Image (cartoon, rainbow, N blue to C red; front, top):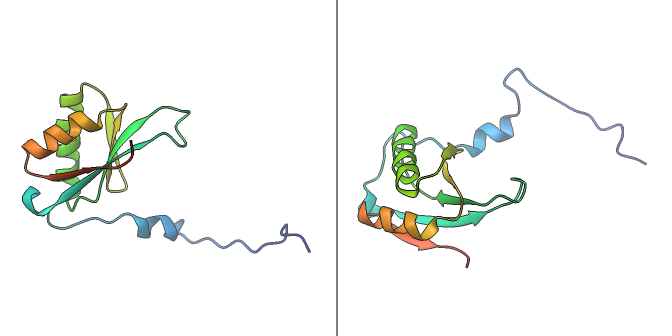
Length: 111
């Protein structure tokens, strides 16, 4: 039996699976109480590399403000998507310096 006759269901709210993935925090934790994880990703971006900051407990406004600081320090573009900061290019070392200066503990993932 083939899978061409699968039942598809949708709602007025759209794909609820995606909405559950985005975690918005009502309060930001102080930098001294957080560890930022820096990753390098290129999947789904046409081979272009982005440096990603994960696992921060910040409000949406604070995430955007931190992204702005990182973009300025690295001299490149970036965005905030689904609670994660993405900075264009390989800038993990520079970002680590900036985050440590701001009081965050930093872990760099990968090589």
